[in-house]
Amino acid sequence: MSTRPGELLGSSTLADAAAGHASRSLWAQAARRFRRNRAAMGSIFVLGLIAITAILVPMFWPHGIEDASWEKILAPPSFDDWHWFGTDANGRDLLVRVFYGGRISLTIGLLTTMVALVIGVTYGALAGFIGGRTDGFMMRFVDVMYSLPLLFFVIILVTVFGRNIYLVFVAIGAVEWLTMSRIVRGQTLTVKGKEFVESAVAIGMSRRSILARYIIPNVLGPVVVYVTLLIPTNIVIESYLSFIGLGVQEPLTSWGLLISQGSGQLDSAPWLIFFPATFLAITMFCFNFIGDGLRDALDPRDR
Amino acid sequence: MSAFILRRLLIAIPTLIVIATASFFLMRAAPGGPFDAEADLEPEVLENIRAAYDLDKPLLEQFRIYVSNALQGDFGPSLVYKDFSVTELVAIGLPVSIKLGVWAMLVALLLGGLAGIIAALRQNRFIDHAVMAMAMTGIAIPSFVVAPILALFFGLYLRLLPVAGWNDGAWQNMVLPVTALALPQVAIIARLIRGGMLEVLRSNFVRTARAKGLPESQVVIAHVLRSAMIPLVGYLGPALAGIMTGSLVIELIFNLPGVGRYFIQGALNRDYPLVMGVVVIYASLIILLNLLSDLAYAALDPRVRRAYR
Image: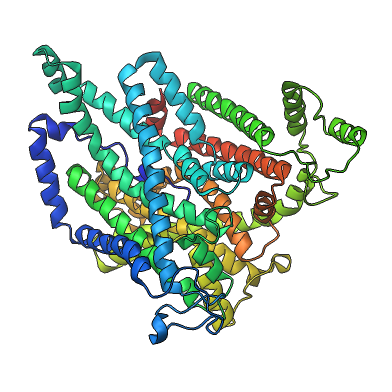
């Protein structure tokens, strides 16, 4: 929970690889390497399946997420009456709740990562471009934030401003941009000093085309890798908050909340924790495999 | 080295100031005051209460009082646990949390270290892949999933260990929470040690050690491990921070009377002084431990010092 995925990433530079080739061939090579990675390709398939079922199943399933049936309280999984995953303490169908919770968990994972992406990329790119004393000051600020136990701050924010699902987005996103800004800033600095940028300046390319053609493509690689590792981290943070009762609130649900409810009824109804925990774990594995695959594909020197 | 210490201190001090400031002003920005529920109070009584808590003074003056009290270890009274001050609650919970955390740390270092060493020495063999797969599982599955499953399996099915409770820290009650708390760190430490060992195993001084005829066990223990352990020293700070945050849910799941349980109860009941007090104390602890871990790291590895310049 405490490790930020970027720490395991190191500061990889694609700049060297890009120096000799057009950027398109670099991406084509990376795509080829990625497609050969079976674990990563399989993960994309499984993740897609989970996402699609999370969207579709609650629409067409015979039970709604709040349909309680008093005759079927804590019914074990069975194929009768479409309770494939069993029912919870209120007689609600677990399968539809797991898929509905998946919608919320995945959405929160994606949106919080977007918040972190926007803040982190803007901050890091600005620091890297401006350089000098401003850069030093901006990065010292990141150092200061970095040594804070950020989860505690998310908890403070949620405590003080109420348990609002949108606040959870902002709170998680607002504390998880630090590594992103470091990666982007480091990458920007490295690329800025490369000969191919110098030669582009020498032949009179405009700042904007240099940015679009050289800087952004080279900064993008590590960012993409970090994003795929940040999504699962944020899903876990959301689950953690929901687990302790500070995240998603009933009648909405998420994997974390389902796991929390299931952990209270372990002995009488173990399926209540089994299904949401399995979906959460599979999702974690998939994102991690994809992240590792992307890193290997984009930066082969690490292998 | 002294320049490095100075630099790190220059980061640690503003961090503490940021924590104190942010927690104080967030607390004051909270919608609704702590005495809103008692709406029938006479205006004079309310005035007296506000004066007793210094709420009638200007905000900056309140901040000054808060900081000077906090520096003396006084974080005010808890709003929910009547008759207890925040400091007293932390003093009650801290021994439990520390005992849990220290044991988890020891287990993580021992198991993680051992697994990492074995994996590195048998690189690309079956045992290496098995260790790395388990490490990935440990990183992918959060502790609040592992903990209930452990309780279910060892507590309810096998009836080997108590499902929950503290029982004055009897070892039977410690096993499951410590395991659940240590597992994610075991995974990370195993990866770290394996990576460090693989790098060192290929280096010239190890080849020299082998060439001069040292037995392999001595090469590994005296030469490889010594260098491979260094990154671990730098990770000790973050690991402790991870254990401290992980401890919140573990104490909740196993119903242990540590700081984490008070903290979460406080957060759920909007007991602002308690939440802020715990955050300030834990954050200071984490920063201090991070600082120590970084300093030790820099003392052992001169490259780190240079990178900081």
